[in-house]
Image (cartoon, rainbow, N blue to C red; front, side, top):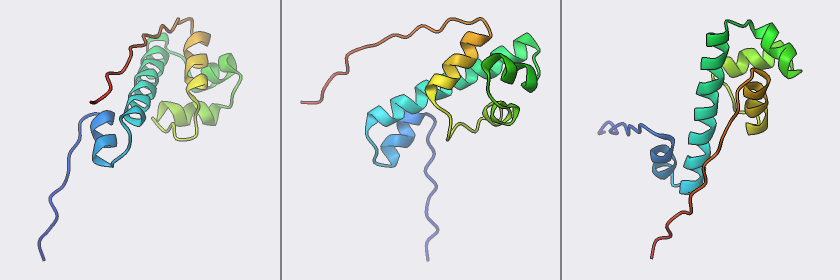
Length: 102
């Protein structure tokens, strides 16, 4: 039996397409990953402990640890925004109209 060839994707949008999911799902994944990367960078830059971040955001230390370990399956986008805001960062958003296929 032939061994299946692995499929490699480099972006969330590519992964969504490969899985047959709508492109909007890939865009949401990318947005959340960008927010997560900014959270991790901000915590490192500020030199804060997980406990200090948790107190600032008013959530549990274990939840912050999970987030900083890139486990955001059960984490809302709102919480990622609240973390950044509690660390003194302002998040801006750019919205563009999607071109519809003919």
